[in-house]
Image 1: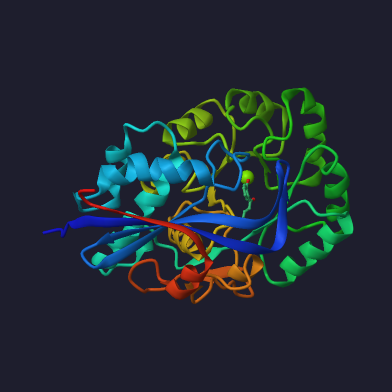
Image 2 (image 1 turned 30 degrees about the vertical axis):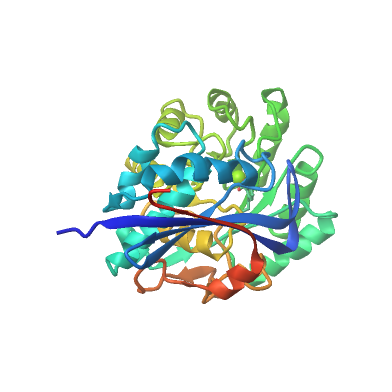
Length: 375
Ligand code: OSB
Ligand code: MG
């Protein structure tokens, strides 16, 4: 018999964590993160989840102050007091709420986290993963100068990372890629535009082909797929979609019309592990490689990204890198470490495989709310 868990309480917390170094994309610069963590309490077990919504509604429409009431008012009441066997049951319970995928993912993933503990099984194994080592890349933001960017790339290459991704936008693209390629002709290099271009700039984007990039991530509008198919026909470089792949249907559509040749899976963006696994499977059947994206997560989201990255078709290095690149001190123990060959070793521990530092979290907490069944 599969043991079910009764969801007795759900706690939301906002923690604030300054980044070791600012992170800049085409939509802005972040110095410090406001992160929503959720805890699902069931039969004496605490399952943890991290909401990847940002400080502002710039990457997507969700942001920290939209996800909080979405969870307290709609999502938490949909699972509180219920007996649940698996994280897989959660999406159906949330189906009435449109979109709000990052809010949903935080809770669904906390249920998976609890389920793995309850079953005394590693979370990665519960998700269907097989890899015991995760290949890692880094995402490097826009810097104050190209020299600073080159220094950062050197640091990350020395640390062993297997793929360098740089953020681009009009005015910080061809000039920058040229300098990178003249110094490192052969490294695995990609770029991410976070929707900074339009189809009118096709000729300009075609000039990226000379840099032999592994991919160009989300060049066009965040909510567009069709125009990416038009663009992909004009480029030699593979397009990778991030923002516009909000679920399995979007992924299937993008592949059907040839809008990309690679997909970035972010578990928060697509609404949770269940949907992320579906996208992984669709891509695997069509021989389209996927990789795990990052959202400047704290250790909990990072641990979940590692677990997801063990699925077989995560064939390209992800944006899942060491804790110390982001935080003075991460909220998990041990912190995520990347070994010299740019790999993260996956543990055999049951659950997420990293302990949560509750005392540290308490110190970082600026807002907290607990909801209980029947209230
Ligand atoms: O587009 O992949 C992105 C960070 C915040 C929002 C969007 C993105 C990113 C990153 C950082 O590229 C990845 C990471 O190191 O966590
Ligand atoms: Mg991206």
